[in-house]
Length: 584
Image 1 (tube, one colour):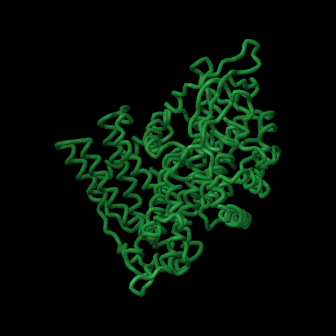
Image 2 (cartoon, rainbow, N blue to C red; image 1 turned 90 degrees about the vertical axis):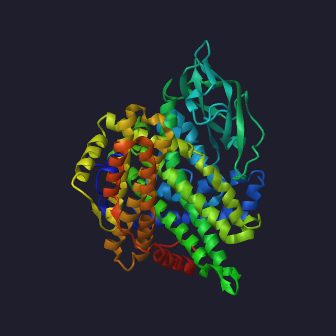
Image 3 (tube, one colour; image 1 turned 60 degrees about the vertical axis):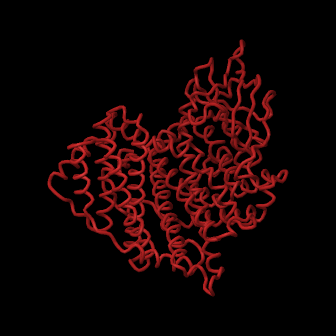
């Protein structure tokens, strides 16, 4: 583990392009898994989407079992418990492919992620043996009951209570959970409750337990095919052996599971956004106005290109992070009884990257479906066209697995905590930046220089925030949000550029041209936005001579020239229109 990069360390160091994982590195097995998962979604799910959206009785279970037969539900589960135990790239591929499946992605994600990973990582051998085979096969449906009506993002303020019986054989649970995916058909619920009113703890609760009932289906904007209900617990008796992990350590279970959940939701977003682009590009090629396919109009080209660029950047971030997670898993000894907890601790190292992926990917998806509707014109607003459903379904992504606002606050706060523990040299790097700036203007040459400029913009602004507010910086969410955006964009720009550079070396510049164009277009069109964000944030952090000093420093580290991004986008749009879908 000592040789692996620390989470967040990309801000302070250079990364060799050959050290990151990209989709171009898929093995033959990865490609086979991709074909299997994509084929399942195309053949089994999309062909029954109307029935799925109408909640046809028994269809969800039928699809889950079909996915189970292909091994798609057990990717994270050991073969000892009926799973396939695939690597993190394979699980990412499955999540990406499931992104195209609309509301089924939420059902299957609840099954394979938050509904089962608490048991995979924190369960005892007996708990795993009892519950995981059914989840892997799809014969049992898993659900995750954390959210409560009054708690929302503040999960630890939950009011659900658990009281130990006088004979110590079971806990009695009382409370209400809200917005619980898979609740209508849930066989296994991961429920969080406070023992004695204060010890936040996780439990495995059987769906047929006496006293466990569900409310009516929520009438949702999107993902209509998935079940979302409240779960009511009235004197539900849970065997003591179904307590998950340790008393009072429910937050450890919850937060570790959310890291993976956020990452997989980002992968879902990649698949969903690719589908939106495919629909938009196909329609733009077929739809004629004034005798010309609208794909040939400049503003439509710009939309198609920007959609493709955002997908490329997101895909680069997601698989780079997947490579980090896989390398982490390979460095750990997870053979013992506490192997799941060891794995969870390892994944936690990249909690910051998981949050970055979640925010960027879900907002890239939002852009893709929105412009997808726009390209369809009035037809995009019609339920007869698939893009209308994608638009509605995508809205929940920015809320699931911790809102994007919550995830933004996590990023700078995590960096500050790791600096305080001596894990990251945040203050040291801020000091070094000021010393470098003192030497005069720093000329940024090429995209590599602009990527470094993005990192320096973040460090300069973060330093100003720490100087003004110190440990109280997290209380100022407008500042924290801007700092998070600067850090996210630095990771996004670097991931896109490293992937393109790796492709140039491995495939040749001609074959990597489209990747290069996408990376260059994104970096050059984003750097100015980061400069403005920093200027606005610094103005909120300082005044007078101090502000003048900071703005002069900002100017010194953003001394750059940019490329013709209009020409780059035109070339990208041509490539996308030619094949009618995302291509790199």
